[in-house]
Picture 1 (cartoon, one colour):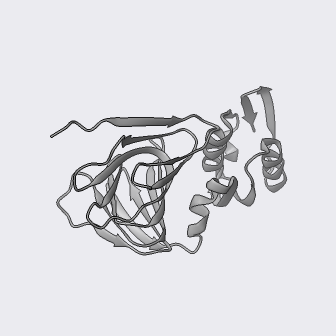
Picture 2: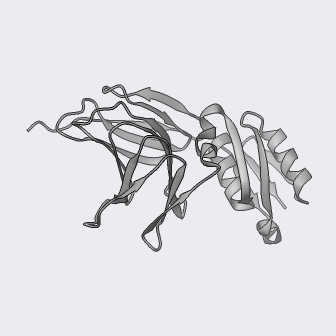
Picture 3: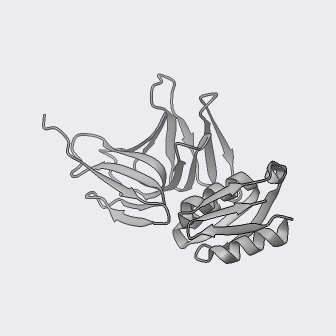
Length: 219
């Protein structure tokens, strides 16, 4: 058999990219993410590798299921729309299903895969190696980055800063550990960093300081 030739698409911090694969599948790739995919799909399975976050709109082909591998998580589909968030530095991998159905499981496991239904989110904990599926009334939030919106629901300061650093390509150093316990609930457009920082300063007693074009401190 021929060796499969792969393309590798890397999206930098602060970037976002949309691509159509040769089978007609559409993929939106978020900042600080990488997708490895065959130039041409061959054989009876369409397989891609994700590191970071992407939204998939899978072209249906029942004869050739589509498979996304993200670290230790395997997602199998025939035709559907879903978001996968699998950054190496995060403690969990989240898969959120909007339409259709998908099967999810471990890459190296003989256990049967679990089926997901629309409106559900599967959370894989890397430390415990366990996947838990739950109905998620905010499942639309998962792919809000595609329309350049930032949505935080009961998010810790660290989670917010991690998202901001990927989205805006900046580094934010926390200078006072006491503020780490703050949580945030807000929605805003993802194109104005100063506005986001002002919102955070109005919600909690934190203060951001710009050190250089790409570095900030918060205390």
